[in-house]
Amino acid sequence: MVIDLEIFSPVQQINDQLFAEWDLLVYIKRDDLIHSIISGNKWRKLKYLLKKAQSQNKTHLVTFGGAYSNHLLATAAAAAQFGFKATGIVRGEQVDNDTLFMCRLHGMHLMFTDRESYRDKPALFDKYFADDNQAFFIDEGGASPEAALGCSELVNELTETYDHIFCACGTGTMAAGIINGITQHQLPTQLHAIPVFKNGDFIANEIDKLLTVPANYQLHTDYHFGGYGKVNNELIRFIKKFVADTGVLIDPIYTGKMLYAIYDLAAKNYFKRGSKILAIHSGGIWGLLGMKDRF
Ligand SMILES: *Cc1c(COP(=O)(O)O)cnc(C)c1O
Image (tube, rainbow, N blue to C red; front, side, top):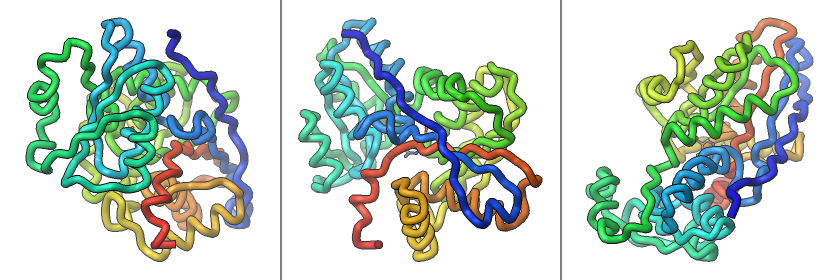
């Protein structure tokens, strides 16, 4: 089976009084529309990993994530679509939620593990799958050079040149991939990464490891809203207004924080007048389901 999806990820303008006042042109690349479940950067990150598994005749994807992981869910759906068996090793005690329900629905086998053992993923893989020569290890979040390569292809699709590209940042793989794409196409574009967790400075090491050529980029570490998966009323208010104003659904874990950063920086006169800014909608809207009670 050929492992591929036809990419539909249009760029559309975000019109807002704030951007008009500061003479900014702001756009959003709709990677969330790539697939309803294997959405956003998750398809880009999985593509070359699945091709690698296939080339090694591996038929069983084994991967890792928290109980609300978009990556687990995307892997479950990709495995189903492209004919792999899938096991998800989930951090923490056995629970059930909408994300895990959807993983199971796509045929993923789930195994729960205590937080201590979860830290050493290769050891867990060896413990349970040493005898399974069909098993293929995919790290948490899909983090890998293959995933960065897949994300770099986003830049090939751009038909305009932007002064700034913004993306949310978990493992930093997508940010690294986009920087590599910018380098490869010799664009004058500055990449801005928004870590969605506290003390995000360390992520620069992870990004740098995946760069094909050293490059500079901007890390904004003040938009985590208290940490991974944390929100406050201001962020929720922003998301409600953004969705109601634009019709573009965004999640509070990743894309909501990244877009908040763009609006906040614009209001603080961070950008030169006339700047063209592209936000990457990296998908993950199912993350909303775990946070209904906050809205
Ligand atoms: C997984 C995810 C990210 C993080 O991507 P990294 O490559 O791990 O930095 C960003 N946005 C969404 C919606 C995601 O699901």
